[in-house]
Length: 304
Image: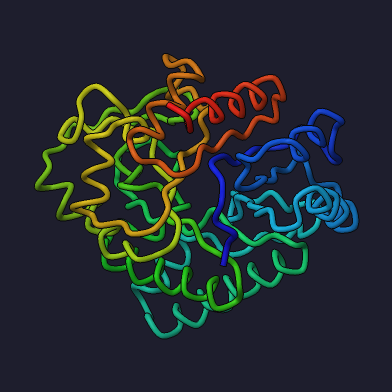
């Protein structure tokens, strides 16, 4: 399981800690974890050394990574052959559920064993979004299926396998990114579907997965929940996630550097996200000035 203490997750700028990053690790009481990207990975020895260096400052700090199989991997310098994409596993499940279960278990066991060897204890997977037609390809083959029952079962098998092998999964992107007609890395998607339809489909997947320890938000406006604020920053939408979807675990934001939130200042994002009910703020770009500002904002927020 993960070490559950603080409020933010930061990305690092390079292959080793800068003096500023060392200072922040040494002096901040707000850091829940460090998230790794391809820019932080040259080879296995270097990555292990970086993680050991991080934990020299904070021995119990969580180390996270985006590692889904398929096209989303940060470890291609270490493992050039990517693991099976979710869509392929979902397609197999439709044809042969027993064979698919075995393949999902083996895939996520390999994933967990790789991460454990490196010193990584939290993974940003599995993707629980439905693969809707005529939507943006940002999710695409990262989703198991457009069939909610297939997605639920595949996600449960994946998440349970990770937990069994001592890696904490993050269910994403709550309450669903699959209907988005644009990439939230670049702009803010707005979903206009009615609540009944959403509750029966996209939201139902996350309701079935509501007992897992961690979830990541979608930077999306759902008009039926809040027509003005994206999920991540909306008290009304997050109340729905907690009370109707019933998610029991901790909730982290998706990366607050994404352009879906570009209309908001860092200070506004921090205040709105935490007030809405997010437990952790995810900041990925490794910009130290922003990290220092977030750390100070969190110090102030705790005493408001």
